[in-house]
Amino acid sequence: MSKQMTFTLACAVVLSAVVPGVAGYLSARLEAVETAERNLRALEARLSVREARDTRAVSLPAPCLRTPVTPRLHQVPATALGDHGKRWLRDVPAWLAEPPAAQ
Image 1 (cartoon, rainbow, N blue to C red):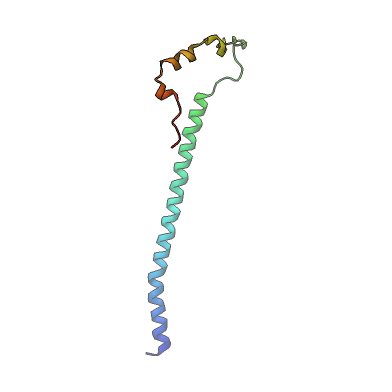
Image 2 (cartoon, rainbow, N blue to C red):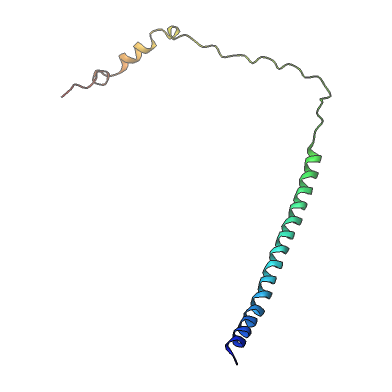
């Protein structure tokens, strides 16, 4: 056989393996995309049903009432405590009340 015939047969053998492989790969990918589209449509349908079920009327049957004002806490001024802070310092031992001496 000539070199040209050997090359032609080699190319035919390679193409006979590559073409069906590529075709199978592409058909599998296309099928995966179609399956994903079907799943997406099913999920969208379920979501729209759920949204339709949970939808509430925009207008309320009764007029809106003003909410009552919440009472605020009264803050006691510090002078109302009297000499409470001074009594506490009297109960602390002297060695704790004084700052440590510098060495």
